[in-house]
Length: 241
Length: 250
Image 1 (tube, helix red, strand yellow):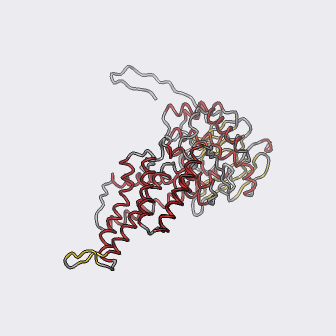
Image 2 (cartoon, one colour):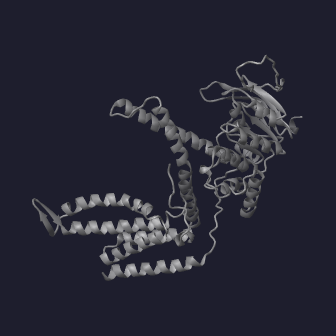
Image 3 (cartoon, rainbow over the protein chains, first blue to last red):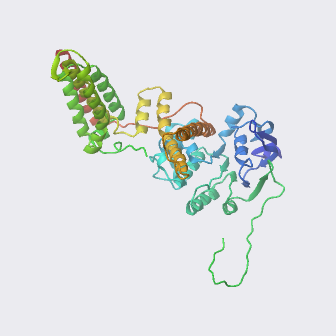
């Protein structure tokens, strides 16, 4: 069973030097086609979890198996990173090239694609996200929403098999959030999505877990449901969320 | 907000190959910097100002650039004629104005105006990203090029962080005064900017690693050939020959 998982984490323990233990005996598997949401309070270790999966942080204890291969050394993670895309919380961390096209082509070029292939792939990815015409825009002059979408393009251009999305909706207005939800829903790959926005999670994921006390509560998936409530007509107009 | 007001235009100079412009500006500046003869310096200054006109920049924007140097030159004119002793040009009561000082101030003025005008016309008329790509194509070491591009990319982020911190200080009633509290607050501000910049650098590096970065940068830039390039190269070469002749014959 474990070898079928794209990402398998076993008894992961992680603490920052001199800090409290963030991940405690965390077990988690992600299988092909799964769309998992993670809902958890700030500081509960979600971002840490993503960074552990990508090998950016080394767990104190535990085993990580990526695509059926144990990942221990930097070289193991370097191979796996080609197949896992991580969307950072802050788009400014992700977009470092002067122009949008260069930034989107950066990943494919690193994967050994030729210049023309990389450009074609970058243009194609931008078009898919409705960003045609953004090629020569300067990355730091984009709006917050545009930055987020371009960041997503930089990750998708590498044609990953798994996507890790770290609070993709932060700082987005309703309309951009809708666009993003639509785009994410159209993706044909497995992903884990961290968000505080239950509505967004409901739209984009099939399963939502909460994270508590350093581990993911896989035994009790959250179910979203709406309450309808009734009351007498009041004289003061009001709205329901 | 830091801007590149001159970078986007559609003049003859804007259309030239960025590499050619960088090389011309660099060669011109290095040569002019060592000139002494006035005919050569005056011609160089005239050529550079003509280039500035050719670049189609708004006269006021270009003058504002020059004004930065002019302020500095004014200071030289105040100091050098009085202090660089030699043949006396004029006596003003107890102080004398000396010829060598006047000559030197005039040389420096012509040189700096020529160099600034040439760089404004040739180099400031391209976005920094293009400049970086041109330097990369000219085989400037990739590390230096990316140092330039990364600085340029993140200076805006750091500027924004600075404004955020500064606003946070202001809304809590911070007013700069000449006292220890002010100095300490500014020190915290600068320290915080450094800490944030370091943390930012760490995250950018992680993000690059996640996208398979292996220490090699790739440039996508292509500079298509244009007939204007050849003519400009010939003209620039001829001007340089004339300048060198004026310097040596003078």
